[in-house]
Length: 165
Image 1: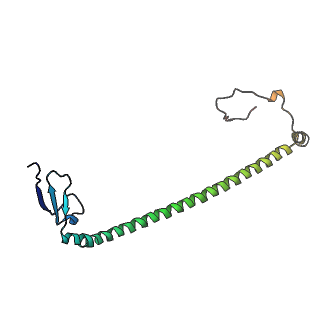
Image 2: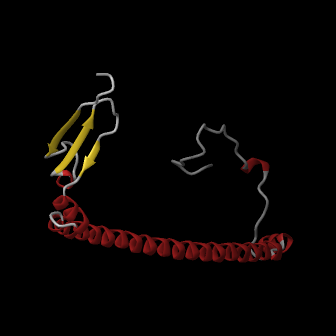
């Protein structure tokens, strides 16, 4: 019996665990003892269904409608997110430009302010101020008896409660 092989035929009704079970219904599977690959023979009716796609077309169309609706909704959401992103990027760019413009304006105003301040400081003649204060306003230097010294406190704040003698 070493040279004889046994042939087993059975009708396949379902292959569990697969989504496309209907495509395999009605197949005749031939198992030859000692063979690793089973041979399949399809009946004419099964071959006609596979070639024309009948039997599964309605189910595929139903799934396609749901899939198309899902794809359209997903596409609309993606487009909305992209438009929102572009608007935010445009807003960010315009705010950045405005900030740069304002910083440039601030720097120009600081330079102008420093120039005017230096002009004012350099235009003040302290000798002229001293001359006007002493001759026209009657200012005199304090004498030694008018100068009082005191020990400084830890704070820089001094509160005067009475007139200084």
